[in-house]
Image (cartoon, rainbow, N blue to C red):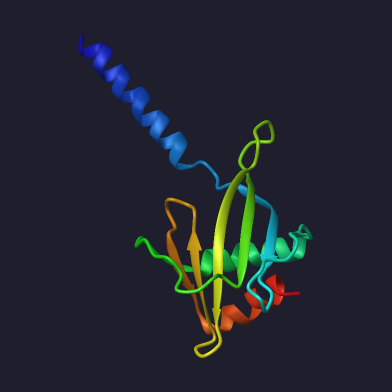
Length: 136
């Protein structure tokens, strides 16, 4: 019985180690919808070029995430859907974001559908780059 328990424990540790080293999904595409002056959302625009995708990936990593649940006080300026590939044989996983740009402070607020990232903020310097990519 002791041997069975130690084998189970060993298997659990190996499984845990394998899962903890698992890579993040690869960002493949970003779909955005910009709000116009009337507050309606325009047609979806796909961002697929490698340079923009890599820059957006870095910017999303720089967001300071908080675990609080919030709703934006106004309609978001941009709605973005990020498409992540974890396995070539499986469908992409989608994460939706509502993004609001704050003119007065020059920062960005992001509300995410991802359970690990509910509310985030992006600083002034990164907001310029972020805005430039999303509002082309």
